[in-house]
Image (tube, rainbow, N blue to C red; front, side, top):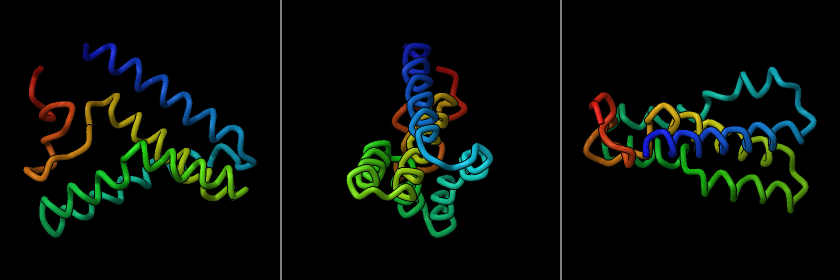
Length: 118
C-alpha cells in the first residue's frame, strides 16, 4: 500500500508541476519557492498544537486547490502560483512520508509515525 500511495502522490506532484508550467513564471522560481510551505514548521517553536495547525495549513492540498482555482477564476497568477507550489510541495512531502501532523508531535502524521519502520 505504501508504494501505491507514493505513486499516487508522485502523480499529484506531476500535476502541481504541470499547473506551474501553465503559468508565465520562470522555472527557477518554482525551485526557489518549493520549500516555502515548510515555514509552517515555525509554529512548533511555540508548541505542538500550534505547530501542527500551522504545518497542516501550509500542507493542505484541499486549501492549495482552493487557492489555485481562486486564482484561475479571479485571473490572478500569484494565487495560481501559490496554489501550485503548495500542492506540489505537499505531494512531495507525502512521497517522503511526511503527512499532516497530529498535535502529539511533529513525527506523528496521518501516514504513520516518521522514522518508524512500517
